[in-house]
Structure formats: structure tokens, C-alpha cells
Amino acid sequence: MLAAASKIGAGAASISLIGAGVGIGTVFAALILAYSRNPSLQGQLFTYALMGFALSEATALFGLMMAFLILFGF
Image 1 (cartoon, one colour):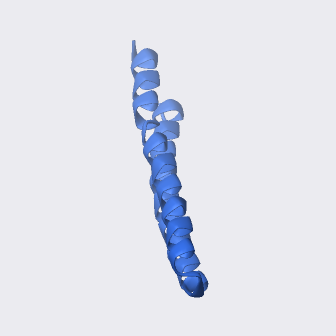
Image 2: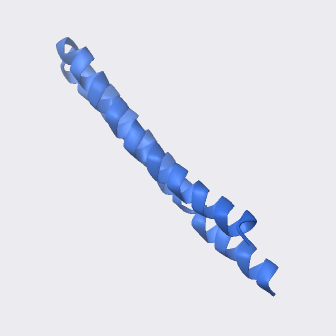
């Protein structure tokens, strides 16, 4: 029973990976749109895009860490 509950919990914790994927796609879609509107701000826009990517990826890593802790922590 405990093994089944931990696998269900790990699956629920990995749902955050979907949101992170959508967030990363949104960040780079906005980068392409902003760059096409104003190409002279390429460096500044890319810096902001990398910061947005890092924050979105950190959310995914926290969710993945929780899933691993649930699976292998018991």
C-alpha cells in the first residue's frame, strides 16, 4: 500500500514538469517576438530570457527533486 501511494505521489509531483515546459516555451516565444519587434535590444532581451529560463527550470528541478525524494526517501 505504501509503495503504491509513493508512486502516485511521485507522479503527482512530476506534474510540475509540464508547467515548466510550457513556461520555457513561453519565455522563448516572447524572446522571438520581442527580438522581431526591436532587434537592437538583442543582448538585453537574451539576458532576460535566460533569467526566465533559469527560473522556469528551477521550478521543474524542485518538482523532480520532490518526486525522487518520495520514490527513494522511504
